[in-house]
Image (tube, rainbow, N blue to C red; front, side, top):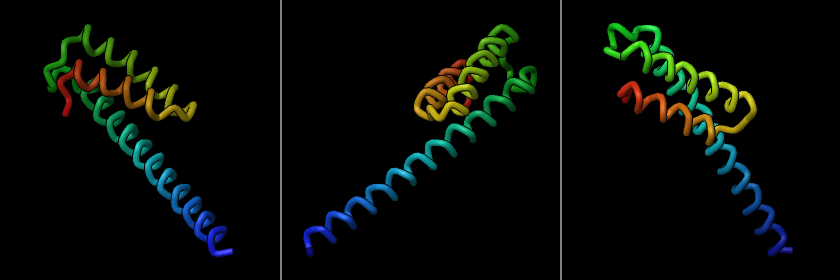
Length: 89
């Protein structure tokens, strides 16, 4: 009985840990999306070339689609590309 309780507790802890990681990834992607949106909307002020801003906008749209589909890893990958392109921290 003790072994069963230990496994059950371990499974519960693992589920909570995964939920926290997923929530953190979602928050990170959402925050980075906001940063990229701001940079694109203020391209002249942030020094982003119009061609780069258009490419960043396309990456942003793809990232939003992936986020809505629940693919946070792909969302973050796409938004990181846009951030690099616009030299966004």
